[in-house]
Length: 177
Ligand code: ADP
Image (cartoon, rainbow, N blue to C red):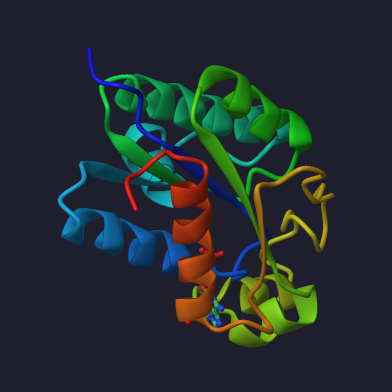
């Protein structure tokens, strides 16, 4: 049996930079010849459970499914990256309990900067009153207490953030240096 892969769990409010960093970390692992799967919460939701919705229960269910998939893949040696708002500590703590080589990455960015960036137009829709449940704006986002990596994406550029993630995963011994 392979040793378990790393599970890199990126959490943060919308537009903080999770998907951008996830894709870049995925590229680096792939280039190194390591097996890797990038589970983007929006894509998993769209493909597996498009009708799930965004109630508290639905968010809990979505993060549960992501954690379960991460566990399944990682136990066969696949390195897994999860990019999910996962606003509650309980969401991330469950994933940590289920996945042995777990690296929580707090993708931190002030909400005003996220509103400016707005790559997916979500905050514009909120400004028009079409969306009323954005974590960090309308509903609580609980910042991690003990994340292995804390990125301030308004101050460090993408490359520096990605490097911090890779360095920590190497330091923890989850991928070779
Ligand atoms: P999320 O997945 O958290 O919703 P995205 O990755 O889709 O966020 O969007 C983040 C936006 O912020 C992108 O347009 C990205 O280019 C930009 N950005 C600026 N600086 C950074 C950084 N240091 N890390 C990640 N994204 C950044």
